[in-house]
Amino acid sequence: MKDGALPNESRMIKVLRQVTVIILISLISAILVNQARPKGVPLLADWGPEVRLTTDAGKSMVISLDEARNLCLDKKAIFLDARSPEDYARGHIRCAQNVPWQSFEEYIDRVFRSIPDDAWIVTYCDGATCSLSEDLAKELASMGYEKVKVLLNGWTRWLEAGLPTEGGRNASHDNRRVS
Amino acid sequence: METERSFVKSHGEVPGLGKGGTGFLGGQWKRGGLLALCARLILGAVFIYASIDKIAHPEAFAKAVYNYQILPGYVINLTAIILPFLELILGLFLMSGLFREGSVFIATVLLVVFLGAIIFNLARGLDIHCGCFSTSTDGTNSAPMAWYVFRDGLFLLPALYLFYLTFPGKKRNPEGLPPPGYAEPS
Image 1 (spheres, each protein chain N blue to C red):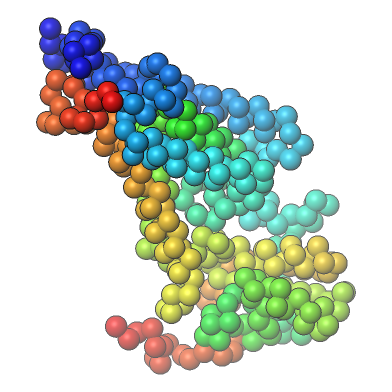
Image 2 (image 1 turned 180 degrees about the horizontal axis):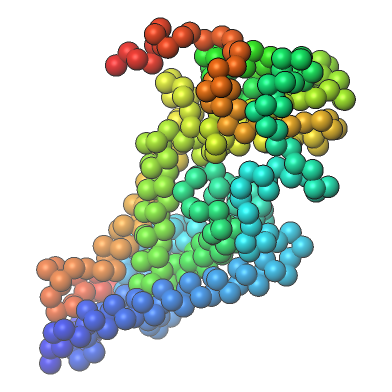
């Protein structure tokens, strides 16, 4: 007896059933474990930058472009460019030094030696989604620096505002135009 | 053998390709072939191993998911919580041979999605380690990502092999019989 249509159909239903069971088991066990454990994460969280950059005490580490500009022009803060040395060399905020977050271990000593505990620090990187600056800022805060701020999407906004920069070449000599 | 063939004809099912059958590893080996068993064990082990660190550090994994810049913010934590358990459960099902069709299906889909996500970010120049778009033209940030593409592609091989064995198409298998040599009893 040949059951022409049925094998494939019942096969599909079988797969669907198995997939549903596997996913349900995973879902239930995942959520149960997460809610029961002390290190669990909230099921819903706000991943916007303002929330990520608010300390437990409720203070925001975000600094506005205007405030950052004033701190730079009045030389009241140390700016740290959290991007790679290559990106830094191509252009950076004039008051900024380079402390690449992705090689931070090499820079820890230098930072400790040259930056006093009570100094204002502004970290920045490039792009609305870049997390280098906030990672650096949080690490500095955990090291004891109490006045650390993050300029979100710092490089792009600084450039667009026409504020003072250093390093790199201007657009007409940009070697990225080589095809 | 006669008994298996008549079983297929009357039940429309392919023996040894799911439903547990008789016996775990031993039974599966006899029906599925050594290569398929190895593929399942390796794939299952990879999934289990990959899940451990993510289950141990959900916050760090949530950050990693965020850095891919693909999913909207409100599903990030749910993904970070559920995905590692899916990998763990999947790995266990794969290694035990239970629910073979469902587990092979999910495994293949997951691996294709992971690979696609990395390739997508590689193509748009996003470094998944920091969520930043790299302006460097020397490719220093894309090297580790290229490695992930290679590695995930490698994992995809046993999955695709199992998928091919588990879901033979209509053209190759109009009566739903096992492919030659696949279900031969030893």
